[in-house]
Length: 396
Figure 1 (cartoon, rainbow, N blue to C red):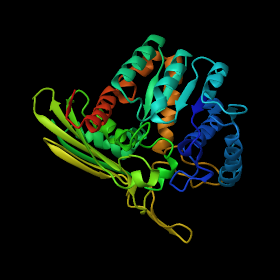
Figure 2 (cartoon, rainbow, N blue to C red):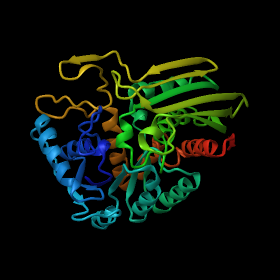
Figure 3 (cartoon, rainbow, N blue to C red):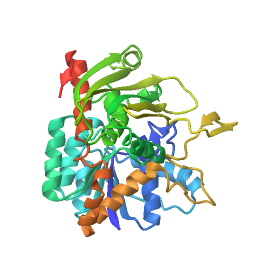
Figure 4 (tube, rainbow, N blue to C red):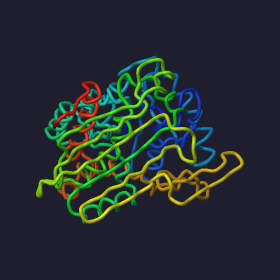
């Protein structure tokens, strides 16, 4: 078993947003719940959560005791909290001091904090998983890549769509289509999420870093060794988020990326759009893409799996238990096959394997979103931000 520290205690980790339960498809959270179940299964040992305000943990424990225990009565939801008292922006450091070397550290914090926390964790001898985007600049990416290599540690990007069986099959199909020609991707969040992201939206990051990262990673994975990005130009829409938050914030960002196929020299184009001003609908997040290669094409609407549920309380919803299955089975959590869960478990088991059988991990390392395999994702996202700021095409 391997010990785990989670840095960040927001919606994706705990299911809490502001002072209450998140009004989204993640009201039970993803990370903490998955780890509690993994501990019950003997996959992880001690679980630590690090935030900034010790008082916040009272609300988290109440949420776990009231809501998670109602669904899964026997689940152990205990954890060690950092800071133990007061307020600290670097509470994770006291946790790092208490963790055995070779433990797992997972970061779910604002984008601009990823580099420093990941570097501190690597220097402390920990394997690290970072929520997308891994970092915001290529220089930061390369520095962490070198540090992880020097320390012999696993540093991985948390992009759970790689573990969606339909997306993964699409990647396998794409690799039989020859040269890359065209991809369109779209992903959204409802404008209510701007309240959740109010502390950092348009200040430390943007919606392209936050959402476009998913489909850009998927494309980079699919055309790895086939095509490379050449240039990026970004455009934006405005008018909603800036009024809501009282500062300049892009509503929707579109990145247009020019690609070059390595063998033939033929050009390809990808267009990635992300928005956080969507209206309420039957899903929390619209997620879809179209891909065309020289010998085939793929269309996927990830938000709609042909599975609808309607209740008096929540009305009609398009359900996707392939991500996280919260409905209990005989009083137990039964979501171990969800791709949100599998993304976390894969990292934990990979870190454990690296410590005991490093040659075994090396055999399938190319399939994992490690820092070595995700450099082009960072390059494209950074180029998109530069294109918006400088108003020009960025060549790579």
